Structure formats: structure tokens, C-alpha cells
Length: 208
Image (cartoon, rainbow, N blue to C red; front, side, top):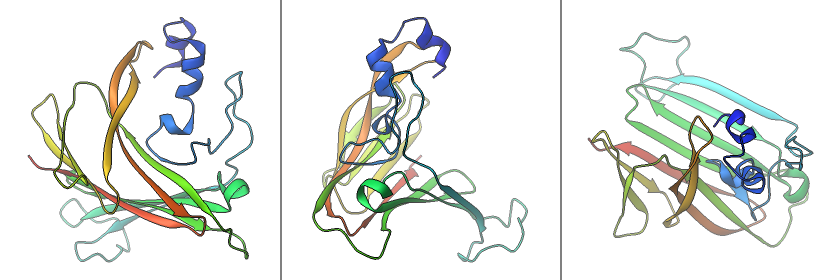
């Protein structure tokens, strides 16, 4: 979404403010708080101050490649990233691990909340993993509640699976390159977890 479209007034100011929130992105949120404050003027306030990213190539046997192999030798790319946006409020570091097959047919993900500091915090918190979808995607909920089938306009068929908690389908909003808002949907995984941390695994796989 280009900011130029927002300046034209196609999206109301309050809605534009919401589109900058953490929950408007395909990531993990805690108690619906932003990982970084979004100020009324659109600038970012306090929150994330440290980001770490590590990218490696995995061989077919699961070992790390010493050097980037050719197309036939590469099995998958592993990306591990983290940010400290929730450390000051909750004492938890958000870490995401992605493993993408080299042919693009499978994406495995794991979101972890890792406690920081010597003293663990007590109590429970609400966590939501959101995966916002583009328009014109047909969705079908699986019988066990842990999966959703995605039928794309080009005829492709994909399946999203949660490793532990049910997946729900909720409304979302998508804006095109001109800033025009379109109603769409999102896949959401919610859970109540202890403040000592937890992990969530998920899978997006092409079926045809």
C-alpha cells in the first residue's frame, strides 16, 4: 500500500492509523498491543529497538550448507528473526523461524516468545497470530479446526495448518496500489499462554 493513496483521502485517517498497527500485519501480537507505538502523526514511537536476522541454506538432509549450493543442491532457506518490542512490557522476545522450500511449495513457520531477564513473570497473556490474505481467495475450514484450504484465483490450491490451536477466519482489509480499501479476510490463531513463554508452529503448503 502506497502512502500516496492515503494522502488522497481514500482511506479515513483513523483507519489509516489502524493499518499501521501490529495487528494489521501478518505477525504475532500480545494482548492487542503494538510492538512499537504508532504516533498520531504517523511516526513510530518507543518499542522495537533491536532486531536480529539470520539466514541460512539447508541441505536436503537438514544440515546447514557451508556455502550456497546450486539450484539442484539447495533444499530450503531458513530465516530466523527476532525483535524486542514486547520485552519492556512483558519480558518476552518475539522470535520467528521460517523455512521455505526452494521450489516455493511449502513454508514452515514457528513463532516463539522467549523470556528475557533472570526473573520470570507470572500470570497469563493473550496471544494472536494473524495472517492477512489478499482479495478473491476462497476459504474452506477443515473439520478438525486446525486447517484452512485456500483456493486462489489462478486455480492454485493451498492449505494452512496450525500445529496446536484452532484457526479462525476473520474479516480484514486490503488496500491496492492506489490506496483503495477492499474487504478481505485473515487467518487467526489465538491462545492464552503463561508469561513464561510459548511457541506456535504452522504450515502453508501447496496442494496443487
